[in-house]
Amino acid sequence: MAVATLRLGDLGLEGWSRAGDESWFRVHPPGLALDAGRGAQELAGAGDLFLTHGHLDHALGVPFVLSQRSLHRLDATRVFCPAPAVEDLRALIEAAARLEELRYAYSLRGLASGERVEVGRDLAIEAFAVDHGVAALGYHLVRRRRRLAAELRGLPGAEVAQRRRRGETVDEELEELWLTYPGDTGPGVFALEPRLFESRLLLIECTFLAEEHRERGAAYRHLHLEDLVERQESFRNEAVVLVHLSRRHRPAELLRRAQERLPALAGRLHVFPPADE
Ligand SMILES: [Zn+2]
Ligand SMILES: [Zn+2]
Image (cartoon, rainbow, N blue to C red; front, side):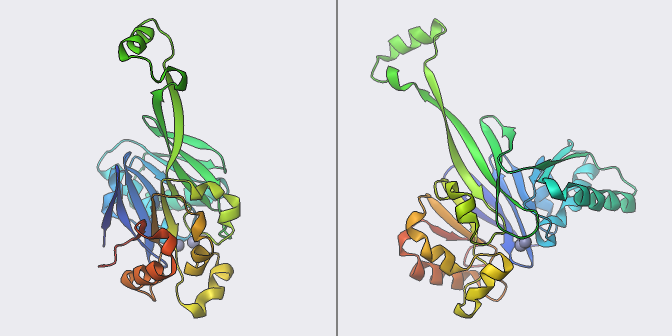
């Protein structure tokens, strides 16, 4: 199956995303998976898998990933999903394990909006509510960073080092949204989670493009390019990556239209998979 990659500063993305086909991403660091598509070999390296919702273009790959990881005797996988989807997802996974006469090593935990999971040194995933009809969550990758406390800035380095040795607190911690992925969502997400405009990297769906499909976004709880156009002045992100494009269009067509219609995002706009796919 097809795999694309994209480098965004310190963060690497690997995956695939087309509406009605499949969507999955691996995020490096920390190597976790956002959605599982229909199952890709590249997902087998992910110890943590965050599922946005149960539509099969995102969820069918969950048992495949667990099967692959179990075959390779990798550590138990932590799977997270929207809380209302837990029992059905567990039934899907367990049915697959019985068919294979295997035991998958995994844990499954349902999340609610606002819940956090630690996913690495100084990294956490935070869930948020989105607008997609079925039980669905978006995810922020939150990075904690330490810097010299504001009141100590300007002091000589030796003085700071001495205070540190004395056991005084010289650092302050700050948090930033490093990456935000709402998964599938209609335009209601902008009111539900306005912090997505502030995240450094935004991976956002843009399923519909054509003028005649303007009504579909709202009806199917997906985004249309014009939903982004209306709000283009609000995006503070360093990069905005458009994903989940309908199979009616080629990524190159999306990139061209988006560049025309989103001048406020000039130099910050990407499509994934890239336009040459
Ligand atoms: Zn989808
Ligand atoms: Zn969906």
